[in-house]
Image 1 (tube, rainbow, N blue to C red):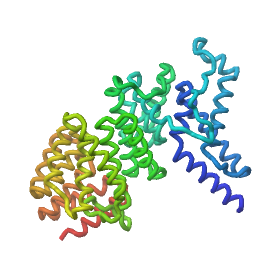
Image 2: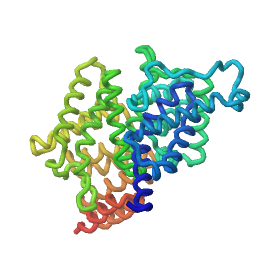
Image 3: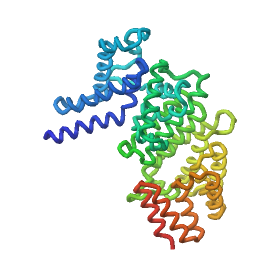
Image 4: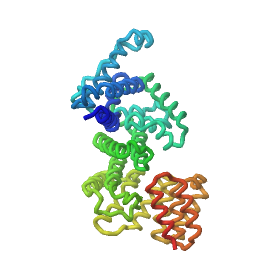
Length: 414
C-alpha cells in the first residue's frame, strides 16, 4: 500500500469514528465536570493526533477506544497543569474523578441520553436546547443547524457557546431525570431526536447522510426503554416506520412519493417493530394523543399498504386533521391539503392551501406548499398555472432528486 492510499484509509477511519461515535465519546468526556467545550477541544485534539500517528502506526483495532484514551489523557494533563490551577476559581475543588461506571477504552459505554437531558435542563435557554443537543449528542455541524433553524451561522455558533458555558458554570449533573422532572425536560429531547432525523432526511448535511437517521432511531429507542412515556414510544414508532422506507425513497436519481414507492423495498421487520411500539404508545392513558403518536399513526396507515395493497385515505384525513389541531405547523397544514384532495378532490385541496397562504405568509417561501399546489392545479386541469407553480417549487430546493421529480411532473402535464 503506497503512502497516499494509507493516508486516505487513515482519514476514512478517523471520519468513520467521528461520524458514528462522536456523541458517545463527547458524552463520556463531558460527564466528568460538565465542561462540554473542554471535552470538545480534547476530542478534536485526539482526532488530530490520529491523523498524525495512524499513517505510521496503523489504525488501532479499536479506534474509538484509542480516541477516548487520548482525549482523557489530554483532559488530565489540563486539569493538573499550572495554568489550569491558576485560572480555575478556588472553590471549584480538586480534579474531578471519573464516575465509577465510566468504561475503559475497550468497553465504551453510552451516556448520550444523560447529555441530552443536560442540554434540556431548565437552566439552559429554551430556544437553544434542541440545537445544542443536535451538535453535542449527534455531531451536527453548527452551520447545518443554523440552516435548519433559519438563523445566521455566526449567531447560532455564539448561542451554542453561551449554552455550553452555562452548563459548565451551573454544574448541571449528568443523569436521567426523575419522573417529576420529565414533563419539562422530555419535550426538547424528543424534538432534538426528531430534528436530527429531519435534517438528515432532507439532505441538509450530505457528509453525514445516513448517520443522523440511524443515531436518531438509536436514541429514540434508548429513551423509550428508559422512559416509556406514550409520546416517547410514539416517536420511536414514527422513526421505525420512516426509516423502514428509506431504500424506496429514490429510484434512478428521482425522489419517489410515498404513495408511489415500491413496498417490496420496505423493511418489514422495522415496520413490525414500529407497530409494536405504536400499540404500546396508544395503550396507555386515554388522554388525546400528542404530535408524535399522531404522526406515527399516519405512517402506520401508509405502511399498511404493504399488506393490503391500498391506502386508507379517509383514515389519513381524520389523523391529519387531529395532527393539525395538536401541532398546527405549516408542513402539517400542507399535508392536510394534499390528503383532503385525495378524499374530496383537487378543488378542496386548493381551497385549503389558499387558507394556509392567507394565515401564514411564510407559505410563499415553503417549497412543499408550491409543489402540492402545482400537483393539484395539474389535476384540476389548470395547465399553465401548474407549470408556473412547479417552476416556483423547483427554485425553492437544491435537492437533485426532488428537482428531478418536479421536472418530470411538469413535463408530464398535457
